[in-house]
Length: 510
Image (cartoon, rainbow, N blue to C red; front, side, top):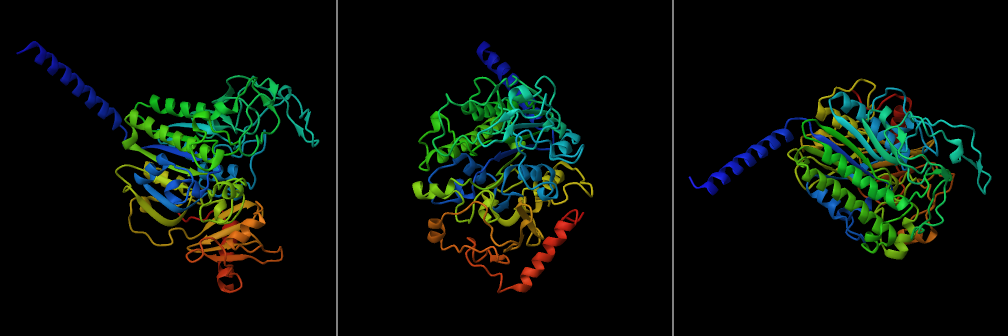
């Protein structure tokens, strides 16, 4: 036999053996890897595949939708960040525990050993990681009470007040995650990298951004507090993206992994990196959304390069609707971050909590599927439990529905959920039952809408004496026609169900 042919056969055999062993490695685990990409303050209309008039393009998120299922009526639990994150990770409505965000140096919002998606998956043999924004509190230690005082006479912790040479308790690694890397919350101190439960470098100075290029839209919005010397906010997003890529590349395929990748974008400060400036027609914010989409694409590419994409379930969603700058964006760029929906972040209008919600799971979800059922981010917990074979306890994920029938296009009764509850502040609740939504308050507004916007859209402003709001979203998706007085029986029925949920310990029967 010719020497060269012999050599080629040997190489081919070795390559085939490698490919086989690589394939065997990839398929060792029957449980899928799970990646949640959680955007921050991204509106329903900030994804180009669900906003025909968008002044930006999100090709990677659009691709994810084309390869999986897009939910047109998916909701975060709250119109603000910390509560929505808590609800996603625990499968319970945030208002059973909290209403507000975790402020600077706020304590952990979790009870010791309680159910989280990460803890459940860790028990099921998964490697678990959280990379990015945490915003659910740590149990910080201090040398003293706050010694800093700002111009408004508000006290804050300075670098000298914070103990930095000990492990930080209460964070992700105490809630079921094997690994954490992030800056906690981009616009809250301390401004430093935390890996697992310790600072990579201690913050030794106090906040000073005087030598940094100011955001092109909005302001820094940073709270005063400790900072690593030379801290650069513009490096936060690129660093987190690189860490996510590295984490995925380290996975060998013989053990399933869970990555909760919580982006701090496109939340303010709106600071797209130089290469993304001018990539949209929606100003700096639009460019920041394009960068956010690019990072989602990098995660998908990392999965492909590691040979893991075919056995990975990917979820893309966001914690709440867009920030108040979105109104001026309509005037300046004709881009509607909430799409056709009314309201923004903090509101109980639909635009405050109806968010992008896309799931890809090769071989299980039909590509380019669209589902119009009302779902909640609390449902992610029960869905993942069903996928990985975990039997939820009676008090675990008490507000979580298993979405598998929707994902696999199986038969189910409609509406899929008996009801869905949204809440942003104490005693301001919204209940959704099918196509009906009741706002049990005089208004769904928290972020004041400008008069020009209300006039443009034909929205009525409601006095504080208004008893409530009822909308039929099948006919009025933009919430313009209040039917509260026309359907008193529907109002009472929905109020009774809301009260039942609020006074009961759970909303899902098991």
